[in-house]
Length: 192
Image (tube, rainbow, N blue to C red; front, side, top):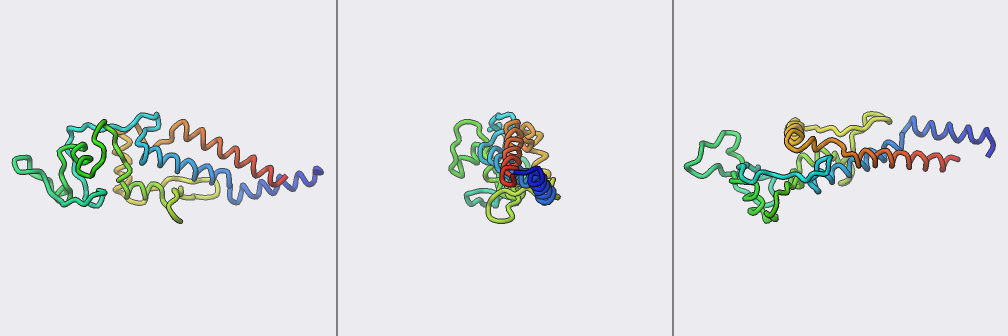
């Protein structure tokens, strides 16, 4: 390869990166998938700690958020009056009671975020198919943007309760850099 050919190939790589930035795109998509799996399937914080719950706390579940059919009902008589917002929800004396009702294992204190479908879908932003897709701002910037206000509030609440669960872990940051570098090298090899 001559120097002139090498300069042309470098310009080709530069133009490709300025136009589409494939290393950034692939790294962003890959890390969003890793982050989503860590949060919604594995139930882990960025530090690797498994989310846990206090089984004695009462909870209300919207029937549409449950994998098993629920009938909206408030607390049993003798308890405090059900707030207006909770009349459309089903009361459970604890998260463990809810897990037992829907047929999930009740041993341990593992919190599964897999059934928070609306938040998961908004977080992953699947545009074509079921693969997580970050929102493209421009060729050099991708973000996770939540469209629904209620999901923004959920993320704030979960971040305060569960160790900033929506931040990238050290592993995810390292994977982002590794994937971006590998893709950059691949582009350079193709053009040379």
